[in-house]
Structure formats: structure tokens, C-alpha cells
Image (cartoon, rainbow, N blue to C red; front, side):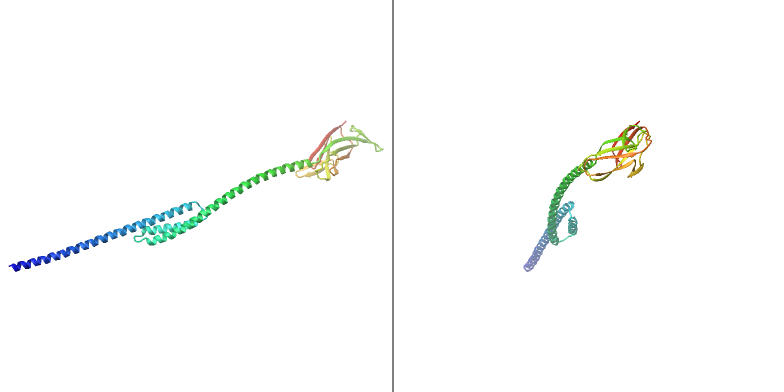
Length: 293
């Protein structure tokens, strides 16, 4: 009986020992699982944190590129290409589910390229600003030069007009007289239409040192009281204008005062008022009138 009790006690001890071993094993297994779960969580947390950081850095790159592109410099095309690379990498990182270390390497390369391009863009902006300032200064100088030239042109035009006006010859002291010519050739002045054989027209061309010297022609027009042009009655055309004249007085002008006198022969002169006009081509330069009784 006592032996039987001892055997039962030994079996119980064995069972207890086995249960103890199983309990310890279970505790170890549970601890290991718990540790693995923590490690997985830690790794997942680290992965998510790295991903967010890379996305943040890439977003900053994109923002920098957007600002530079908005300035619309000559480098805009290059900046757009690099920004597109950043956007593409952002899309890849966003879709990734594991380690993002390879994206960090790509980010570092993109960041390096960005610094180079932004530096070049800043240099270009400074150069453009300098060129703009120089251009504006040039425009101001040109504007002042144009104004000065316009003033000079205006002065030259006024001077030319003054010279042109001053170079015109003045026809002065115009006189007309009627004469009776006797058989002896003697000429007797008369105011009687019935006795007149010739009309003498005389005038003076004044001295003018700035006028052009050389041969001059003046068209003399004598109109009687019946509105008839006496003399040759030839017509000269000047552009759209025409002139019927009595005769042409040809003068050799040498910038000195010249006395001009020419006779217009006729017969049966009408009584009344006569008008005498002298033209330099189609420009009236002198006129007078007289009366035959």
C-alpha cells in the first residue's frame, strides 16, 4: 500500500515537471512572438516615417521648381524637365510599400541638380536685370537723341525756309510808260492811247548775295482794258498751272542790282486801265497798272 502511494507521488511529480516545462516553453514562445511583433511595428513605423520624410523633401523640391518656372526665364524648359522628374519620383515613393532608401539616393541626386539649375537661373536673372537696366538707359539716351535730332531737324527746316526765302530775288521799282515814236526815231512819252506806239516796262532786280547767280527769265504779262493779253500771247506751263505772257525778259544775274527795261510794240492801243504783271515762272513777283486816255 505504501509502495503504491510512492508510485503515485512520483507520477504526479513527473506530470508537474512536464507541465512546468510546457509552461516555460509557452512563456518563451509568447515572449518571442511579442518581441517579433514589436520589431515589425518598429520597422513599419520607421518605413512610414522615412517615406513621409522623402515625400516632404520631394515636395519642397517641386515647390522650388514651380517658383523658378513662374519667373519665365530662358531656362524654363530645363526647369520643367527637372520638376517632372521630381513629380515622377514622388509618384513612385507614394506607391512604394517597403524600404525607401533607394529613393533617398535619387532624391539626393535631384536635389544636387536643382541647386545647380537654380544657381544658374539666379545668375541669368541678374544678367537679365543688368541688360534691362542697360536697355532702359539706352532707350532714354536714344529718346533724348531723337528729341535733339528733331529739334535740329526743325531748326534746319526753319533755316532752309529762311535761306530759301532770303535767296529769292526781289523785283522792285516797276514802271510802265507809253511812247510815241517819231519818224526820226525820237521817242516822246505820252498818256494818249491813240498816240502810243510802244509800251516800256522797266523794273529793278535787287542785289542778293545768297541768291543763285546765272541766267534768269521773267515772264511779263500786259493786259489791256479789254482784258486782252498783248504781245506774243504765248503760253507757258508750270506743273498744273499755265501762264499766257506778253514777252520774256532774260537777265544775267550776278548777285548785283540789275536794271531791266523792255519795250512792247503795238498799235491801236485801247483806252483805259492796263495791268502789268511780272512772274518768276508761275510766281507773281511784281505788278503795277497805268491808264491810257
